[in-house]
Image 1 (cartoon, rainbow, N blue to C red):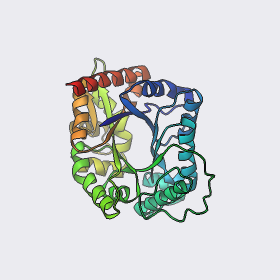
Image 2: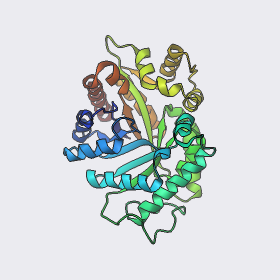
Image 3: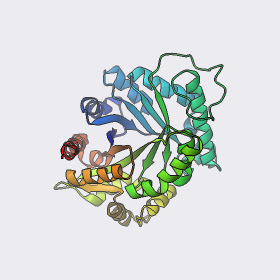
Image 4: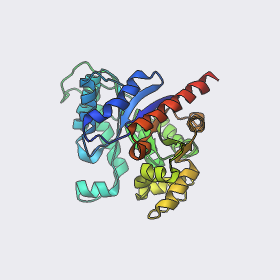
Length: 327
């Protein structure tokens, strides 16, 4: 199983992304650098800055909101990131919460799953036409007259954020990558992988590369596990679709009751707090359940104790991961 890193902060200036990105570039144990939708400095702009500074890890977006840009514009952005980094890119998208959809569209999307499938298909047809993606299914549309110029490009793999079975089926039929968020290993194994595999089989294509985002913090003196869990994932668990997913994972979250929700998230393992060895054992549980890649998320430690301490956690976890592999 591969291990990667989620950028631990939403940069106010792109220079703030350099230290984590250098760690990913320099560590043979880290596969790629992920960042989701940013409302500060744009994610693609931050990645472009890193490339300009000569820091060029493999990149992933997890996830960019479909409501913010046309799928052809998303395809152009994904291809541009591959070109400027010189690395393959995993470009994952998702519709966002109902509230975000309401703010951007005027009303929530009545069919977000179907809309996301169309978005992925439109992205793929655009990229196939320019040689940046391969045909993996029958959904790609006419590619004889590409809108974008054809230029040499590292591979772009199109992905989607997956919380529940309906979007898992979309991933299976239309995506190269599925990125989960706040899912336990058992939930992914039992409720997301089967519909994903079934949908992929119907289209005669391989199951998407499955990435699990795992929020972690190494237990240290002076750290408060509940506060870290609240800072790290409390905002997501206040949203209905994330709370519903958490309950499917066995976490008795209570939106509006921050302390109880944080305790439930810790108990269920949605936020992993413990020694580096205990965190690695939890990561290995994902591998045993069929997950292909872990995206380690250390934003809570960065927010509460600083980026240096958060990256120290990552180094300690990677050291334990190396020991576990040797053992």
